Length: 207
Image 1 (cartoon, rainbow, N blue to C red):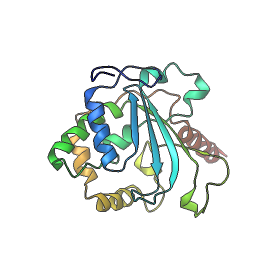
Image 2 (tube, rainbow, N blue to C red; image 1 turned 45 degrees about the vertical axis):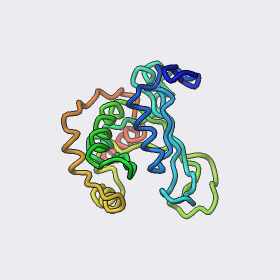
Image 3 (cartoon, rainbow, N blue to C red; image 1 turned 180 degrees about the vertical axis):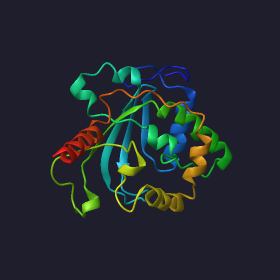
Image 4 (tube, rainbow, N blue to C red; image 1 turned 135 degrees about the horizontal axis):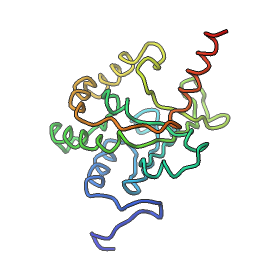
């Protein structure tokens, strides 16, 4: 296979860009296990820690808006947006030690221009947050936050603050660097869990 030959692993979409391949390499060094099949489809393995003995607890698939719009209505409800994760500085890509931090920050911020418009579908198999010693029961569909107020106690700032300390980053600084990134229009079928919860709360208020 030549260095210029395109690879999509048989999935729908366009070939990987050079930028995606470079960021993918850096992510693997940082023990973030993600793979871009091509710009329209990405897949990520989710571990509970970045340590060698980490447990595989879930998987997320991320697709472009153009592919999302081709899905059936009921299928679209299983996917979530990434706007808050990107714009708040919540989503980070820990960089490899071999690259200067400033250079990686530029690459990370540039990558967020693409991620902000992607839709994700995430299932967790192992509920480590409730103390399960094994992956028990059925996989659980997970949604991403669309508002900071949706974060359970101790709250968004505390949750992200703990992560900041762990990786030596500042989400507020990242949010400021990402202010220029346009906020995409999110399809009405996405983030359905939060919309259903909001609807139920409204009905309770009316009773």
